[in-house]
Image (cartoon, rainbow, N blue to C red):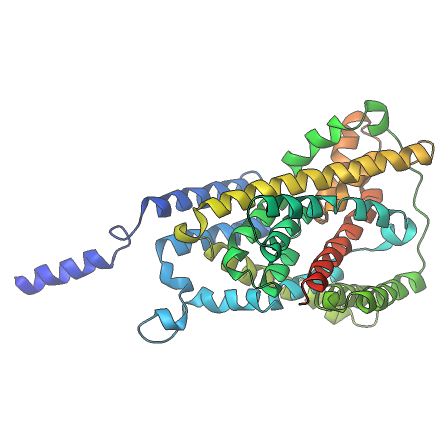
Length: 382
């Protein structure tokens, strides 16, 4: 009888119910909200589903991300090894490879002024950097937090790892991916606040055709120029442009398809679940995390505002040939931000088609955010 009682007691103590804290239950609830937004609302499900599920797992079974030193048998948890690939900057770089293979740089090549719109949207990053310092973050932590303003999860993870901010990587990544997912909610009110109905209804001229030679030369030239100026950006910009060269060269179809499909989705699973697993209640529910989430929102709002206001300036200088709405796409959440520009413009004129015009600043924003990360690494001598 005592054997049965002891066995039942051991089984009871092995369940998670006796070990969960209030914080764990809060994080489980947050994970369920993220799953709802991803599955029911369709907000970036490829990102939110693995992130939310990783969040769910770690708050039920914390050892799933335990390091070898923290376990009795010297073997780390499954997601510990996934997360190590984040810290080593491997997964973010591979994400950029896939993004490059999936993305058409034609709109950016056809309308080089898009580079300026993408650059203008990076104002959110540097605004957040200054605010983060005022909030008490160290210089390097402030830089890692500020990249959230680019709405670029892989670059946020990459920079946090390079600057030695592994402790903040989880909250930074979750905030960045969350704001990427919430682009359709956050951006439209800002876009409408700073534009008039007349401006939102502006029709832009069709983009010129881009030759195959231009498409092939673009990733090579950008890699040479950017990496000569900021060599530390090579892992991100280099992989982005390599993926695009796979796509545009036309001679490595198998590599292009692998990078944009199978490899991309494998990396998203590994990165998403490991990022989610970094959000245990102990690591996530604290004042620093709340500051990061708040600063991320401010950065994202300022980035959107900067892009739209610069779009208004270009609209004035070109005598109404540029719709300011496409400036909001400079925050680099590809292709969601471009779709939002299209949606808001279509609300004023359903026959207006801004998507391809917005893809130019959108792609420029990806490059711009990587460059901003390179600037911070150069400043801190990484």
